[in-house]
Length: 452
Image (cartoon, rainbow, N blue to C red; front, side, top):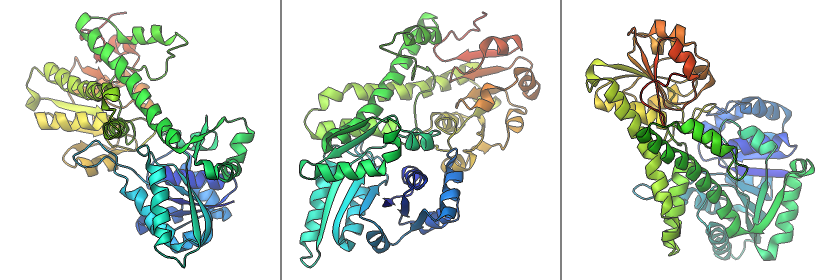
């Protein structure tokens, strides 16, 4: 099939390359010429494992191309995926849908014949219906334009660091359709996703507003699970208990499961924080805000974990931060990503700097992006330089490089003979670090070393 993917950020670029990999002829569309030139040369503007190889292979095969021209996109295909961003509005928790609206405004005037839009962006419920009405008004304003626009919703479920696999081998495909065009939209989606469907991927067809709610409900639930164990973590710190053992014990319950029970610094990134706020904002607009009020506390719990690390650092520095050099290991919000949006690790580093600590930051891939957000921090290009001469170490992102770090080697790098590390992700082999002479402090566990 011929497809366009409008928006070539994280979601759009990944979807475009993966659709080409599935055998379709794909045109990526974006208003940013710099991004289009970069993608056309075979380089993604962000880090995602496997994606560069996929991009280069399909560019070379002629399955994939990019443009800034909406007229070219209108002539290229009759199936269009919307993959633009829906950031949080400034001064509000609501989602900003101006870029989704702009897709309709920019493409529809160039259309002739029947076109189907599959929305992938995470949007407030009711957006698909509104976009369909917007497209209809644009067409009616030009009586000489013989076009019909059908809007369906096909939410994405990508995990950064695993986005290629999640697109090529999804765990479910959700499609929201309008009754009058359900058969056509469903048939086209089945053709687009023929390979994963043939492999047994569940295909769930529902109305558009339900499909819109599926994605944001999934993210809200995951955020709730993470903040739940972090709320328990706060109790553990007060009661001298061990949250990691609690998480393991309750995770063995089939009804609960172990995923997303890693107590620590909490969640960040471009999805979970802004999505739960947008969910609450939309519920308020619909007059049912009380039903999601608990999500506001979920957000607060998540933020408190960052503040807890600052408190620990100040305590360990005897409230003399000006005499302490701290190294934060991690700037991305999660491993295998260079995304620093609402990153807990980077936020902690910035707050430490504000409090007067000399703050070093190292991340395997996210240093460049981090420096754009917080240019005043001191960034290191390798782990050795990051540790050299510091007084306190904080694990902010659980990269494998940090998890596998040799504590004996690390001790020889730092300035103090009795070093301390704050394991804010509960990812280190605790006893191994204690045996190497480190004081290890973890969230949700006793501040004192727990000799095992």
